[in-house]
Amino acid sequence: MGGMSELPLEGITVVSLEQAVAAPLATRHLADLGARVIKIERVGEGDFARNYDTAVDGLASHFVWLNRGKESIAVDLKSDAGLAIARELVARADVFVQNSAPGAAARLGLDPAELATADPALITASISGYGTSGPYRDRKAYDLLIQAETGLVSLTGSPAEPAKTGVPASDIAAGLYLAQSILAALFRRSRTGRGGVVDVSMFDATAEWIGHPMYIQMHTGRQTQRHGLGHAAIVPYDSFPTADGRLLIGVQNDRGWQTLMNGVFGRPDVADDPRFVTNTDRVAHRVECDSAVAAETIRFAGADLAARLEAAGVPSAVVNDVAGLVNHPQLAERDRWRTIGTPVGAVQALLPPMGFGDVELAMGDVPALGQHTRALLHELGYPAALSAEWISSGVVGV
Image 1 (cartoon, rainbow, N blue to C red):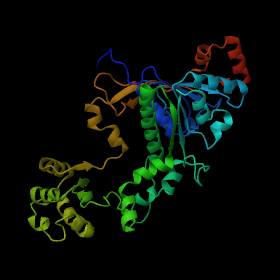
Image 2 (image 1 turned 180 degrees about the vertical axis):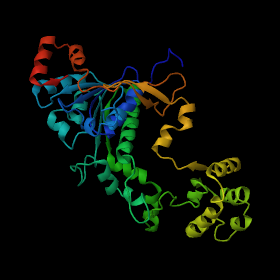
Image 3 (image 1 turned 45 degrees about the vertical axis):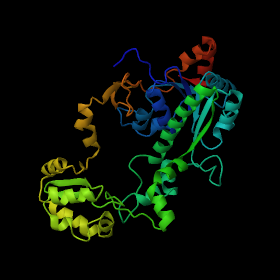
Image 4 (image 1 turned 45 degrees about the horizontal axis):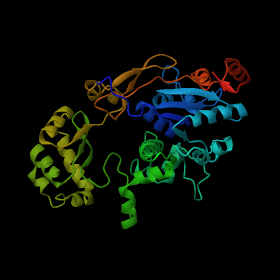
Protein backbone atom coordinates (compact mmCIF):
# COMPACT_ATOMS: atom_id res chain seq x y z
CA MET A 1 0.00 0.00 0.00
CA GLY A 2 1.13 3.54 -0.65
CA GLY A 3 1.78 4.84 2.83
CA MET A 4 1.85 8.48 1.70
CA SER A 5 -1.64 8.38 0.17
CA GLU A 6 -4.44 10.16 1.95
CA LEU A 7 -7.75 8.52 2.68
CA PRO A 8 -10.42 9.95 0.36
CA LEU A 9 -12.33 11.82 3.09
CA GLU A 10 -9.38 12.81 5.24
CA GLY A 11 -10.03 16.24 6.75
CA ILE A 12 -13.83 15.93 6.58
CA THR A 13 -15.73 16.06 9.90
CA VAL A 14 -19.17 14.52 10.27
CA VAL A 15 -21.40 15.02 13.32
CA SER A 16 -24.22 12.53 13.54
CA LEU A 17 -27.34 12.36 15.69
CA GLU A 18 -28.04 8.77 14.75
CA GLN A 19 -29.46 5.50 15.95
CA ALA A 20 -30.34 1.99 14.80
CA VAL A 21 -29.10 1.03 11.30
CA ALA A 22 -29.68 3.39 8.37
CA ALA A 23 -27.76 6.53 9.37
CA PRO A 24 -25.06 4.63 11.30
CA LEU A 25 -24.39 2.57 8.16
CA ALA A 26 -23.96 5.73 6.10
CA THR A 27 -21.59 7.34 8.58
CA ARG A 28 -19.61 4.14 9.09
CA HIS A 29 -18.84 4.13 5.38
CA LEU A 30 -17.77 7.76 5.66
CA ALA A 31 -15.51 6.82 8.57
CA ASP A 32 -14.06 3.93 6.56
CA LEU A 33 -13.27 6.45 3.83
CA GLY A 34 -11.33 8.59 6.30
CA ALA A 35 -13.86 11.09 7.66
CA ARG A 36 -13.87 11.97 11.32
CA VAL A 37 -17.30 10.92 12.59
CA ILE A 38 -18.55 12.23 15.94
CA LYS A 39 -21.58 10.33 17.16
CA ILE A 40 -23.93 12.15 19.54
CA GLU A 41 -25.61 9.68 21.91
CA ARG A 42 -28.03 9.80 24.81
CA VAL A 43 -26.54 9.95 28.29
CA GLY A 44 -26.88 6.58 29.99
CA GLU A 45 -28.51 4.65 27.14
CA GLY A 46 -26.79 5.74 23.95
CA ASP A 47 -27.83 4.54 20.54
CA PHE A 48 -30.52 1.97 21.31
CA ALA A 49 -28.82 -0.45 18.92
CA ARG A 50 -26.23 -0.89 21.67
CA ASN A 51 -28.82 -3.01 23.45
CA TYR A 52 -30.22 -5.18 20.65
CA ASP A 53 -28.26 -8.24 21.79
CA THR A 54 -25.03 -9.27 23.51
CA ALA A 55 -23.69 -11.57 20.79
CA VAL A 56 -20.22 -10.05 20.34
CA ASP A 57 -18.64 -10.88 23.68
CA GLY A 58 -21.32 -8.84 25.42
CA LEU A 59 -21.68 -6.13 22.77
CA ALA A 60 -24.56 -5.83 20.32
CA SER A 61 -23.85 -7.28 16.87
CA HIS A 62 -25.61 -4.42 15.06
CA PHE A 63 -23.61 -1.81 16.95
CA VAL A 64 -20.26 -3.47 16.29
CA TRP A 65 -21.12 -3.79 12.60
CA LEU A 66 -22.21 -0.18 12.16
CA ASN A 67 -20.12 2.00 14.46
CA ARG A 68 -16.44 1.33 14.06
CA GLY A 69 -14.17 4.28 13.53
CA LYS A 70 -16.42 6.79 15.32
CA GLU A 71 -16.04 9.01 18.36
CA SER A 72 -18.86 8.89 20.93
CA ILE A 73 -20.00 11.87 22.96
CA ALA A 74 -22.94 11.39 25.33
CA VAL A 75 -25.04 14.55 25.68
CA ASP A 76 -28.42 15.45 27.16
CA LEU A 77 -29.82 17.48 24.26
CA LYS A 78 -32.84 18.53 26.33
CA SER A 79 -30.56 20.64 28.51
CA ASP A 80 -29.45 24.08 27.38
CA ALA A 81 -25.80 23.25 27.93
CA GLY A 82 -26.09 19.92 26.10
CA LEU A 83 -27.74 21.54 23.10
CA ALA A 84 -25.06 24.24 23.06
CA ILE A 85 -22.36 21.57 22.98
CA ALA A 86 -24.06 19.79 20.08
CA ARG A 87 -24.54 23.01 18.13
CA GLU A 88 -20.90 23.93 18.60
CA LEU A 89 -19.84 20.52 17.30
CA VAL A 90 -22.06 21.00 14.25
CA ALA A 91 -20.66 24.49 13.69
CA ARG A 92 -17.20 22.96 13.28
CA ALA A 93 -18.39 20.15 11.02
CA ASP A 94 -18.64 19.70 7.27
CA VAL A 95 -21.64 17.37 7.48
CA PHE A 96 -24.49 16.92 9.96
CA VAL A 97 -26.40 13.61 9.74
CA GLN A 98 -29.58 12.68 11.59
CA ASN A 99 -32.25 9.99 11.48
CA SER A 100 -34.32 10.97 14.49
CA ALA A 101 -38.08 10.41 14.66
CA PRO A 102 -40.12 12.82 12.50
CA GLY A 103 -39.62 16.37 13.79
CA ALA A 104 -37.45 15.31 16.74
CA ALA A 105 -34.25 17.01 15.61
CA ALA A 106 -36.10 20.28 15.04
CA ARG A 107 -37.74 20.08 18.47
CA LEU A 108 -34.31 19.59 20.01
CA GLY A 109 -32.99 22.69 18.28
CA LEU A 110 -31.05 20.89 15.54
CA ASP A 111 -33.35 21.46 12.58
CA PRO A 112 -31.31 20.49 9.48
CA ALA A 113 -32.77 23.21 7.25
CA GLU A 114 -32.13 25.93 9.84
CA LEU A 115 -28.58 24.73 10.41
CA ALA A 116 -27.91 24.79 6.67
CA THR A 117 -29.34 28.29 6.39
CA ALA A 118 -27.14 29.52 9.22
CA ASP A 119 -24.04 27.94 7.63
CA PRO A 120 -24.28 27.83 3.81
CA ALA A 121 -21.21 25.58 3.58
CA LEU A 122 -22.72 22.93 5.87
CA ILE A 123 -24.19 19.76 4.38
CA THR A 124 -27.13 18.42 6.37
CA ALA A 125 -28.23 14.89 5.57
CA SER A 126 -31.34 13.24 6.97
CA ILE A 127 -33.00 9.85 6.76
CA SER A 128 -36.73 9.62 7.34
CA GLY A 129 -39.24 6.85 7.00
CA TYR A 130 -41.50 8.34 4.35
CA GLY A 131 -40.01 11.69 3.37
CA THR A 132 -40.63 15.31 4.27
CA SER A 133 -44.12 15.59 2.76
CA GLY A 134 -47.16 13.49 1.98
CA PRO A 135 -49.78 11.77 4.15
CA TYR A 136 -47.25 9.36 5.71
CA ARG A 137 -44.69 12.05 6.56
CA ASP A 138 -45.09 11.85 10.34
CA ARG A 139 -45.30 8.09 10.65
CA LYS A 140 -42.56 6.32 12.53
CA ALA A 141 -40.88 3.75 10.37
CA TYR A 142 -38.76 0.68 10.98
CA ASP A 143 -37.16 -1.60 8.44
CA LEU A 144 -39.82 -4.31 8.43
CA LEU A 145 -42.64 -1.77 8.29
CA ILE A 146 -41.09 -0.22 5.18
CA GLN A 147 -40.48 -3.64 3.62
CA ALA A 148 -44.17 -4.33 4.09
CA GLU A 149 -45.46 -0.94 2.95
CA THR A 150 -43.39 -0.93 -0.25
CA GLY A 151 -44.42 -4.45 -1.21
CA LEU A 152 -40.89 -5.83 -0.86
CA VAL A 153 -42.18 -8.68 1.30
CA SER A 154 -44.66 -9.59 -1.45
CA LEU A 155 -41.67 -10.48 -3.64
CA THR A 156 -39.70 -12.41 -1.03
CA GLY A 157 -40.40 -15.84 0.38
CA SER A 158 -42.09 -19.00 -0.83
CA PRO A 159 -45.14 -19.23 -3.09
CA ALA A 160 -47.20 -19.94 0.03
CA GLU A 161 -45.90 -17.23 2.33
CA PRO A 162 -44.28 -13.78 2.02
CA ALA A 163 -41.16 -13.07 4.08
CA LYS A 164 -38.95 -10.18 5.02
CA THR A 165 -35.38 -10.20 3.83
CA GLY A 166 -32.86 -11.77 6.19
CA VAL A 167 -31.00 -8.47 6.56
CA PRO A 168 -32.52 -4.99 7.06
CA ALA A 169 -32.77 -4.18 3.35
CA SER A 170 -34.72 -0.92 3.70
CA ASP A 171 -32.29 0.42 6.29
CA ILE A 172 -29.32 -0.59 4.15
CA ALA A 173 -30.82 0.94 1.01
CA ALA A 174 -31.44 4.28 2.74
CA GLY A 175 -28.00 4.28 4.37
CA LEU A 176 -26.20 3.63 1.10
CA TYR A 177 -28.16 6.31 -0.76
CA LEU A 178 -27.43 8.77 2.05
CA ALA A 179 -23.70 8.05 1.94
CA GLN A 180 -23.71 8.42 -1.85
CA SER A 181 -25.61 11.71 -1.59
CA ILE A 182 -23.21 13.10 1.01
CA LEU A 183 -20.25 12.29 -1.25
CA ALA A 184 -21.99 14.04 -4.15
CA ALA A 185 -22.74 17.06 -1.95
CA LEU A 186 -19.10 17.23 -0.84
CA PHE A 187 -17.98 17.08 -4.46
CA ARG A 188 -20.37 19.89 -5.38
CA ARG A 189 -19.18 21.95 -2.42
CA SER A 190 -15.58 21.56 -3.59
CA ARG A 191 -16.62 23.29 -6.83
CA THR A 192 -19.11 25.85 -5.55
CA GLY A 193 -18.42 26.31 -1.83
CA ARG A 194 -22.10 25.63 -1.22
CA GLY A 195 -23.38 22.92 1.13
CA GLY A 196 -27.04 22.02 1.11
CA VAL A 197 -29.82 19.88 2.51
CA VAL A 198 -30.01 16.18 1.62
CA ASP A 199 -33.01 13.98 2.41
CA VAL A 200 -33.38 10.24 1.84
CA SER A 201 -36.47 8.31 2.83
CA MET A 202 -36.45 4.61 3.55
CA PHE A 203 -39.69 4.29 1.58
CA ASP A 204 -38.25 5.95 -1.53
CA ALA A 205 -35.00 3.99 -1.31
CA THR A 206 -36.83 0.68 -1.05
CA ALA A 207 -39.31 1.61 -3.79
CA GLU A 208 -36.32 2.20 -6.08
CA TRP A 209 -35.03 -1.28 -5.24
CA ILE A 210 -38.32 -2.91 -6.30
CA GLY A 211 -37.12 -2.27 -9.84
CA HIS A 212 -38.37 -4.59 -12.58
CA PRO A 213 -41.38 -6.01 -10.66
CA MET A 214 -42.70 -2.44 -10.42
CA TYR A 215 -42.49 -2.01 -14.19
CA ILE A 216 -44.11 -5.40 -14.76
CA GLN A 217 -46.97 -4.33 -12.50
CA MET A 218 -47.42 -0.95 -14.17
CA HIS A 219 -47.34 -2.26 -17.73
CA THR A 220 -49.02 -5.66 -17.43
CA GLY A 221 -51.06 -5.37 -14.24
CA ARG A 222 -49.35 -8.53 -13.04
CA GLN A 223 -47.85 -9.12 -9.58
CA THR A 224 -44.47 -10.86 -9.74
CA GLN A 225 -44.85 -14.21 -8.05
CA ARG A 226 -42.62 -15.56 -5.30
CA HIS A 227 -40.51 -18.60 -6.16
CA GLY A 228 -38.30 -19.09 -3.11
CA LEU A 229 -34.75 -19.29 -4.42
CA GLY A 230 -36.02 -19.33 -7.98
CA HIS A 231 -35.83 -16.28 -10.23
CA ALA A 232 -39.19 -14.76 -11.11
CA ALA A 233 -38.25 -13.95 -14.71
CA ILE A 234 -35.51 -16.45 -15.68
CA VAL A 235 -35.69 -20.25 -15.89
CA PRO A 236 -33.76 -22.36 -14.96
CA TYR A 237 -32.41 -20.21 -12.15
CA ASP A 238 -32.92 -22.07 -8.89
CA SER A 239 -31.54 -24.55 -6.39
CA PHE A 240 -31.41 -28.10 -7.73
CA PRO A 241 -30.83 -31.44 -5.97
CA THR A 242 -27.52 -33.27 -6.21
CA ALA A 243 -26.57 -36.69 -4.93
CA ASP A 244 -25.34 -35.16 -1.68
CA GLY A 245 -27.11 -31.79 -1.32
CA ARG A 246 -28.22 -28.88 -3.48
CA LEU A 247 -26.58 -26.52 -5.94
CA LEU A 248 -27.89 -23.25 -7.34
CA ILE A 249 -27.68 -22.99 -11.13
CA GLY A 250 -28.28 -19.72 -12.98
CA VAL A 251 -28.90 -19.77 -16.74
CA GLN A 252 -29.06 -16.20 -18.03
CA ASN A 253 -29.97 -16.70 -21.70
CA ASP A 254 -30.83 -19.20 -24.36
CA ARG A 255 -27.18 -19.89 -25.21
CA GLY A 256 -26.64 -20.81 -21.57
CA TRP A 257 -29.60 -23.19 -21.75
CA GLN A 258 -28.09 -24.98 -24.73
CA THR A 259 -24.72 -25.19 -22.98
CA LEU A 260 -26.30 -26.62 -19.83
CA MET A 261 -28.30 -29.33 -21.54
CA ASN A 262 -25.87 -30.17 -24.35
CA GLY A 263 -22.45 -29.39 -22.93
CA VAL A 264 -22.99 -30.47 -19.31
CA PHE A 265 -25.72 -33.09 -19.44
CA GLY A 266 -25.57 -34.33 -23.03
CA ARG A 267 -29.32 -33.97 -23.53
CA PRO A 268 -29.99 -32.32 -26.89
CA ASP A 269 -33.52 -33.71 -26.81
CA VAL A 270 -34.26 -31.62 -23.72
CA ALA A 271 -32.33 -28.62 -25.02
CA ASP A 272 -34.48 -28.51 -28.16
CA ASP A 273 -37.79 -29.40 -26.54
CA PRO A 274 -40.26 -26.81 -27.93
CA ARG A 275 -41.35 -26.00 -24.38
CA PHE A 276 -37.85 -24.93 -23.41
CA VAL A 277 -36.20 -23.29 -26.43
CA THR A 278 -36.50 -19.66 -25.28
CA ASN A 279 -36.55 -18.17 -21.81
CA THR A 280 -40.16 -17.11 -22.37
CA ASP A 281 -40.99 -20.74 -23.15
CA ARG A 282 -39.13 -21.96 -20.09
CA VAL A 283 -40.85 -19.46 -17.77
CA ALA A 284 -44.22 -20.57 -19.15
CA HIS A 285 -43.25 -24.19 -18.42
CA ARG A 286 -41.26 -23.55 -15.23
CA VAL A 287 -42.26 -26.74 -13.40
CA GLU A 288 -41.52 -29.01 -16.35
CA CYS A 289 -38.21 -27.29 -17.13
CA ASP A 290 -36.98 -27.34 -13.54
CA SER A 291 -37.99 -31.00 -13.25
CA ALA A 292 -36.00 -31.82 -16.37
CA VAL A 293 -32.92 -30.09 -14.94
CA ALA A 294 -33.34 -31.74 -11.54
CA ALA A 295 -33.49 -35.16 -13.19
CA GLU A 296 -29.96 -34.52 -14.46
CA THR A 297 -28.42 -32.78 -11.45
CA ILE A 298 -29.41 -35.54 -9.04
CA ARG A 299 -27.01 -37.89 -10.83
CA PHE A 300 -23.94 -35.96 -9.67
CA ALA A 301 -22.23 -35.18 -6.39
CA GLY A 302 -22.33 -31.43 -5.74
CA ALA A 303 -18.59 -30.84 -6.11
CA ASP A 304 -18.43 -32.85 -9.33
CA LEU A 305 -21.40 -31.04 -10.81
CA ALA A 306 -19.99 -27.65 -9.82
CA ALA A 307 -16.73 -28.53 -11.59
CA ARG A 308 -18.57 -29.59 -14.75
CA LEU A 309 -20.66 -26.42 -14.74
CA GLU A 310 -17.62 -24.21 -14.24
CA ALA A 311 -15.74 -25.94 -17.05
CA ALA A 312 -18.70 -25.35 -19.36
CA GLY A 313 -19.12 -21.73 -18.28
CA VAL A 314 -22.50 -22.24 -16.62
CA PRO A 315 -22.84 -20.17 -13.39
CA SER A 316 -23.49 -22.04 -10.17
CA ALA A 317 -23.14 -21.51 -6.44
CA VAL A 318 -23.31 -23.44 -3.20
CA VAL A 319 -26.32 -22.44 -1.11
CA ASN A 320 -24.30 -21.43 1.95
CA ASP A 321 -25.37 -20.56 5.46
CA VAL A 322 -23.70 -17.73 7.37
CA ALA A 323 -21.02 -20.07 8.71
CA GLY A 324 -20.22 -20.85 5.10
CA LEU A 325 -19.66 -17.15 4.47
CA VAL A 326 -17.51 -16.65 7.56
CA ASN A 327 -15.28 -19.55 6.51
CA HIS A 328 -15.44 -18.83 2.78
CA PRO A 329 -12.10 -19.40 1.00
CA GLN A 330 -12.66 -16.29 -1.17
CA LEU A 331 -12.54 -14.07 1.92
CA ALA A 332 -9.54 -15.89 3.36
CA GLU A 333 -7.49 -16.00 0.15
CA ARG A 334 -8.11 -12.30 -0.56
CA ASP A 335 -7.14 -11.33 3.01
CA ARG A 336 -10.47 -9.58 3.66
CA TRP A 337 -10.43 -9.89 7.47
CA ARG A 338 -8.96 -7.28 9.81
CA THR A 339 -8.84 -6.87 13.59
CA ILE A 340 -10.58 -3.89 15.19
CA GLY A 341 -10.78 -2.79 18.80
CA THR A 342 -13.94 -2.69 20.91
CA PRO A 343 -14.65 -1.92 24.58
CA VAL A 344 -14.39 -5.66 25.28
CA GLY A 345 -11.32 -6.43 23.18
CA ALA A 346 -10.36 -7.21 19.61
CA VAL A 347 -12.85 -8.64 17.11
CA GLN A 348 -12.65 -9.53 13.45
CA ALA A 349 -14.32 -7.37 10.78
CA LEU A 350 -14.44 -7.37 7.01
CA LEU A 351 -12.63 -4.76 4.98
CA PRO A 352 -15.03 -2.27 3.37
CA PRO A 353 -16.25 -3.44 -0.03
CA MET A 354 -14.86 -0.36 -1.81
CA GLY A 355 -11.15 -0.71 -2.44
CA PHE A 356 -8.59 1.95 -3.38
CA GLY A 357 -5.40 0.84 -5.06
CA ASP A 358 -3.13 3.27 -3.25
CA VAL A 359 -4.42 3.15 0.32
CA GLU A 360 -6.25 0.71 2.58
CA LEU A 361 -9.40 2.23 4.02
CA ALA A 362 -9.63 3.04 7.71
CA MET A 363 -11.15 0.55 10.13
CA GLY A 364 -11.20 2.27 13.50
CA ASP A 365 -12.34 0.97 16.85
CA VAL A 366 -15.90 0.63 18.11
CA PRO A 367 -16.42 3.30 20.80
CA ALA A 368 -17.79 2.85 24.28
CA LEU A 369 -20.68 5.15 25.15
CA GLY A 370 -19.26 8.59 25.89
CA GLN A 371 -15.71 7.40 25.38
CA HIS A 372 -14.68 10.69 23.76
CA THR A 373 -16.82 13.09 25.78
CA ARG A 374 -13.99 14.55 27.86
CA ALA A 375 -11.64 14.88 24.89
CA LEU A 376 -14.25 16.60 22.76
CA LEU A 377 -15.21 19.03 25.51
CA HIS A 378 -11.55 19.89 25.92
CA GLU A 379 -11.23 20.35 22.14
CA LEU A 380 -14.18 22.74 22.22
CA GLY A 381 -12.37 24.77 24.85
CA TYR A 382 -14.52 24.06 27.90
CA PRO A 383 -12.65 24.19 31.24
CA ALA A 384 -12.08 20.89 33.01
CA ALA A 385 -14.03 22.10 36.05
CA LEU A 386 -17.08 22.87 33.93
CA SER A 387 -16.83 19.51 32.19
CA ALA A 388 -16.69 17.81 35.60
CA GLU A 389 -19.77 19.74 36.69
CA TRP A 390 -21.65 18.67 33.57
CA ILE A 391 -20.62 15.06 34.10
CA SER A 392 -21.84 15.07 37.70
CA SER A 393 -25.16 16.72 36.75
CA GLY A 394 -25.83 14.40 33.78
CA VAL A 395 -25.55 17.04 31.07
CA VAL A 396 -22.90 14.81 29.48
CA GLY A 397 -21.87 11.22 30.05
CA VAL A 398 -18.55 9.45 30.08
